[in-house]
Every structure is written in C-alpha cells, then in structure tokens.
Length: 359
Image 1 (tube, rainbow, N blue to C red):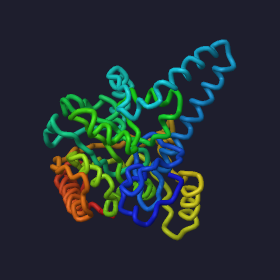
Image 2: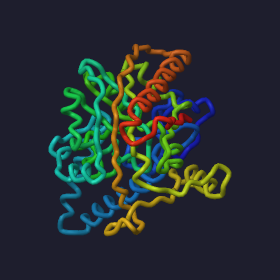
Image 3: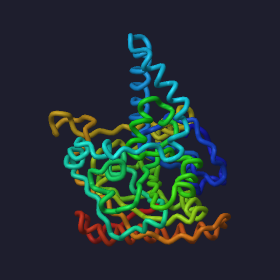
C-alpha cells in the first residue's frame, strides 16, 4: 500500500504476498485483511480510514498516559512491547474469552450473519480461504472468523482460523493486543510461511482477495469479484501444499451504499492519487443513522450476510511452481467459486438468472 509494483506483479493477489517481492509496504492500515494487484493498496479504502482512526485513538490514549500519574504503566507496556514485537508473526495470542464476548453475538444478530459449512475440513491439512466479495468493511469475514459468534470452531473442529490484515496494525500499541486476541494475523511473508510450515496442521488463513478494486465497486445488488488476475495466493498455496477453499458471502455488498466513480472520472482520479501518495483511497459511502433507519449515517444497514464455505481444492506442494501450475490451479479455483455461487444463490434471495461477474 502506498508504492507501485512492477508490471510483472500484476497477477499477484497482494503486495505483501507478491511472489516477485515480499517487501512489506509502508501503509496506513485497515482492520480487515485485504489484498492488492497492479499497485493497489493492501486495504480497502474504507477499512483503511477506520484503521487510521483506531491507530490515532490508541496513540492518543497512550501518550496521555505518559502525562499522568500512571506513566509507569506506559513505560512497562513499552518495555513488554520490545520483547513481544515478533509475536504477531508467529500466530499471535488468540483468546477464546475475547472471541466469545457477548457483544459479538449482538453484532451477529443485528444483520444477521450466518456461517454455512458445505464440507468437512481435515485437521491434517492447512488451508488458504479466499473470501469474496470484499464489500465496504468485510463485516462477514470479521464476524465469522475473528469471533465465535457463528461458532466457526464448532463447525470446523480442529481448524484454527487466522484472518489476515495489514502488518502495520501490529505496530500500534494496544490495538495489536486486541487483534491478536481475535486470531488476526499480519498478511506478510514471514507470518504466512510460519503458519503454513511451522505451526503444525489445521491452520486456515483467510485472505480477502479482491482488495481495494473490489471495494471501490461494491454496491447493493451487485455480485462481482476481482479475481481473474489475482494469483499470488495460489502460488503461496502451491509452495506450502495448502488446500484452497473458496468462500462467497451473500449480502456482503448490501450493508452499505457508496458513490461509485467511473474509470476516467475526476472522482476516480482523486482516489488513485490518494492511493498512490497517501496509502488509501477515500470513498464516499453511508449506512443508516444511529437512531433512525430513515437517515444517513455510518451504522450498516440490517441486511442478512450469509457466508458459505465451499469445498477444499487439494493442492500439491511444489517448492518452485511454474506459471503453468499457478494458472491451472487458479482456473480451478475460479471455477469452484462460480459453482459455489450458482449452487447457493437461490437459497439466499437471488434469482436463478443471476450471474457472478468475475473481473
């Protein structure tokens, strides 16, 4: 996020996971794991703004503590932070207590959010989940995989889900502790390699593949994914022999409305300039008001979100996969995602004629 990729990286699913360069981007991070291609940002424009606000709030609170009689607490915390700096790269410290907070059940019931299991997952395998579509905030991804509100651990016993987000979030004091407690991990090479090769089996890393491009085109009534040129996550799966699991979240695009700027318009030009020089592209979106559904606000609309976890695609372990290998399994993944959408679309309010647009 915030720097350009060479043309050879156009097929990568994320800058952090780019097979040509695993350098982490200097970012202003969001809270949900995202991905990029063609030099786009690693977080959605909207979640990036949310993440920036969280970072500012955490910094302000900590700086204030230094100026009070509780300054020793801040000193002790920073000392601890120095020793604990690399913990997020090794899977963090998830807390079942935090993941089971009652507030997550209220959050689930507001929409409501539902997690649908279609196939069993083997605890002897590792997985990369591709989450689609991004939506504005990726609320389904957060609720289903960073909390136990939809009982993900009961539906997939022995599987440890890790929702991938930007590494910059874990440099922020206090916020990093909360993220780790929910089982959220940095989306960078060190972390992914560790979880898929040195953390045993039964790990499932959730990557929101569409990233900013998908988010900027998110709107109610539209079922479209940005996937055709996102292949970095497939290369990762091949390098580690991690099975790929397509996920489609029906209703993710329904909870917010946004102003869509067409390519070539002044609005899209401004978004791209912000994305290039600041690290995120601002978007204009709204939900309902806090006290009335008839007014505009930032509260998401109460629309059902149903996240369907598809059948895993068995992936062989190839230390040096060729482009032909990557293209083969990427095409299999796209086909599986479309089949998943077509099989379940009528169950969740879509007509039989609805077609998933794959860009």
